[in-house]
Image (cartoon, rainbow, N blue to C red; front, top):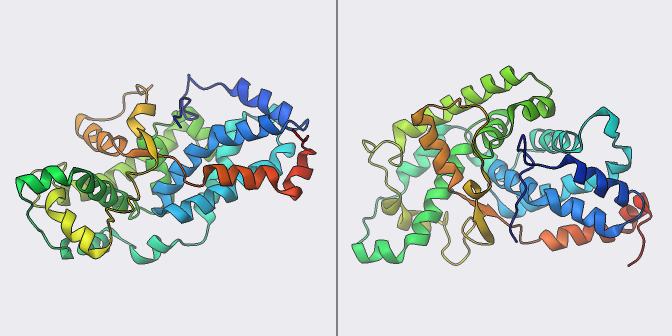
Length: 298
């Protein structure tokens, strides 16, 4: 399953098509409601993955948001704003207000996170091992970078994910977060600074003076249970990378150094939720939710 339209784009996303689907869905068209859910589900899930760093929890949170979407859709008033602004305001508020998730309870700061990384042994790989373990090395890299994101507080984390990784249009961001575009840019700049200074001081991917290297950490990550070759969290159930969904930034606000960090995160997989069909089916087929729309039988 490939995602084509980026709902965070300032120019290539059709709000009009959302309105067509909403009109049909609220008149009982099951397929239109299903398409509306599918249209946004993958982006919501991928933000959840970056926010929570756990597949099962991200799927549960995605379902909670989609249930909110379906049960509140009849109350949506297009005269008061665009649908995606309304939907992602609900989505982002949900992310900011859910109970503390499992990873957030373990890793509460960059100091603690890098203590875990430093405590994992460095095990050099032979040239042959490095070739054979390329996927495991990539999984370790993404897992480590995802862990770094978790060290930001929730607001900073969400701002960085949608502002830097998914390149949200700053005008749209200001509408969703209910702040000015300049305020959003300031928040994004602070999030970048906090994350990038830690990466610069500790991560060998962006500063070769740092001794930490993904290949040397991979066997230790596997031994610690942070990476599973048999059940990869990031490099499974995906057909695209985030960079495939990116577009040229409307505003050139990054320095060359900041672009390096952003590029690393855009190389991460854009995942497909394993339970995507189950989530959609549970929503569409639930009797209480069906009654919200009086959905017509096929």
